[in-house]
Length: 384
Image (cartoon, rainbow, N blue to C red; front, side, top):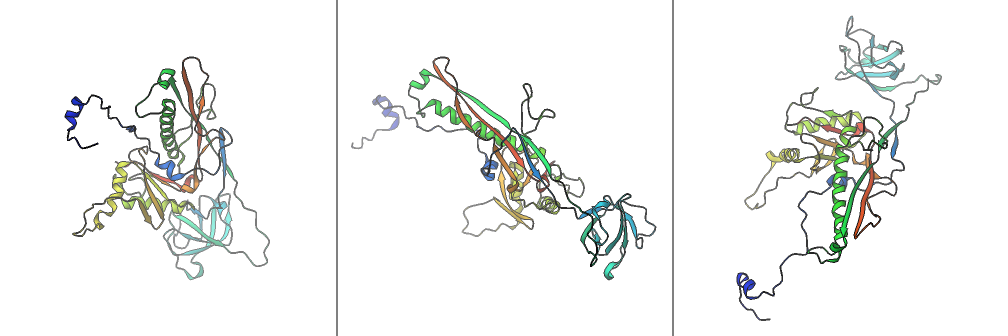
């Protein structure tokens, strides 16, 4: 057809046969992304029970603390009390936090948690004892030809979480199914997809923030079964401004982030590889590189984005999630986290019985969080 030259405003009046110009795509305006679930990926297995359990174990501890402030002479005393005498054996070389002196344990009284030691072992210089200092066990030296020592071992522990049912109902009338829709070829299918997006969004939110019931966690006819999320799981590595030695700033700083990463590294064999934050904390992380940013006269793109943070304690992908509470930073080892469905209960659509001129069904899924070795993860909270 040849060019007519008609403008749009005149075409509508002169050519009433022109159809309504409506795109066949529908834009979804509400947030429905799940960046944490995407970063974690699919689990290797599914849960087998609504009460999901897993086993954890630990090596025998090689640290303790001094629990004694009653020294006659802190430079020469050969006995002092620790918190857990059972962690020590005769023949252990030990060193106190911040000290270069090495001591040799010659006797242990587990009843009073008292160690008898040789001071200045191996030619080291004795240094003052102090209450609450960390005691590092360097290693034990056995006597040649000696009898076997007492058996020492750790006990495996069971950890528990519960599955949570996520459900949404879909219902479309027969007439709605029959008519031609703008942007939708199948209204029932469209509603299924919308409800599934909502449930995935809610799953990520519960994985981060969910709480299990205080009692009857397995659920009952009157108690809804809910999963415990990441934040409630973490109990060991919790960092807050001005609590202990944690820096006091209420806006996230690189010093705070490294302090927390170092604390997690020191307390476990975890390898933190995910930093999950909300908008304010993500902007603070982007600001780490502000002072080092350089531009040339040819630069025509301004970039202010940190996607990966690499420190001495790990290479961490920075994940922005809307569902992390304000003032919180999650430091996670993704190899120890699984979001898993109950076997055969991943999100699916189940048609319901027809009771009239309509099609109805239910989108349903049942999931739980398995967070192994909670001391391999950490959380910074209390930021402004």
